[in-house]
Length: 221
Image (tube, rainbow, N blue to C red; front, side, top):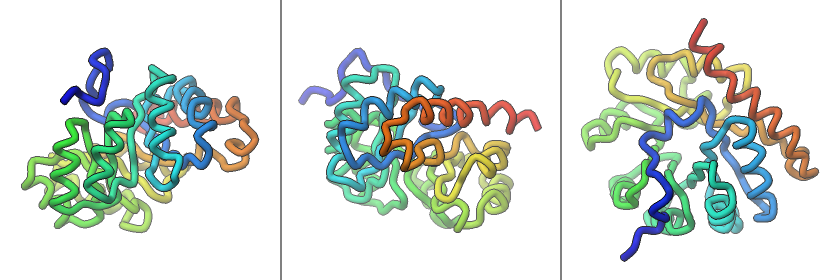
């Protein structure tokens, strides 16, 4: 069986190192997918997580993969094993789940693309480390303990790296990015509902550019 990804598309070594912020995108209308992705990429956020929460999600991934070559599109809210294969077949280059089971983890691993299984407890982190997984999504970040929790994990579990997502905005993102075990954060603040509804892609690009600039300021403090 041939690979679902064209040979010209390079593999993604680590989702955590693509950009300081991964936009978490809920696409209701597939017509928004390409202009939205172009605005995010132009603003400096190439990694785009399209959540599998809407009927338009797979078509949106397919459209972005086919028409926005500088985007690294992935699938989020992967909660069933079959979704991993469907997402990669549509063009997803990484997978993100809000949580994990051994069955789901096996499906994501078999997909052949990088994946971030979701965790919110120390035991879940240790269980993933036992299974050879070192990069994870911390979700729901703010509700699960925020920066204080992640800072506490860095001592005993320095080999684990995280993409915190959930309740994070432009004011709190720098605090997460300053942590040694955080590679990037996930968020949707650069995609205000009114801007998307109005097709105000210039505003999305401006907010994306501001988000892309958070890393240097956070890590230099």
